[in-house]
Length: 113
Image (cartoon, one colour):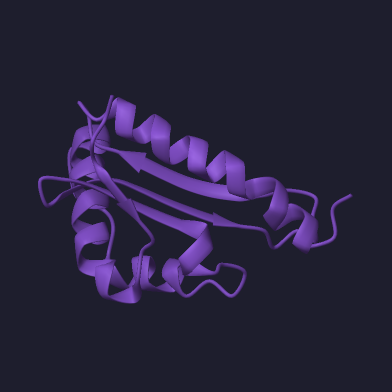
C-alpha cells in the first residue's frame, strides 16, 4: 500500500508539476514538451476548484503523481488529467480513486442528473 502524501495543488506548485510532466514527456517521447505557462493555465481553469478538483502525491518530498478534474460540458462529461511516474502505480491508483469519487458531485453541480 502506498504511503505517499496526497494534497490539493496550488498555483505555487506549477514548477513542480511542470517538472513532473516533463519527466513523463521524456519517458514517453524522449524530450520535455510541457511549459510552465500551460500548467498555470490548467491550474487556473475556471471550471476547477483546486481545493476539491486537484491532487498531488508526494513520496519523500518528490512529486510522483498529479491529477486535475474539470467539467465544462454542462454535466455531460467530466475531464481529467492524470500523470504518474513509473514505480508509483499504487499511488496513481489512489489518486485515480479520489478523482472517481469526486467526479459525480462535479457533474451534478454542473447539471447532470
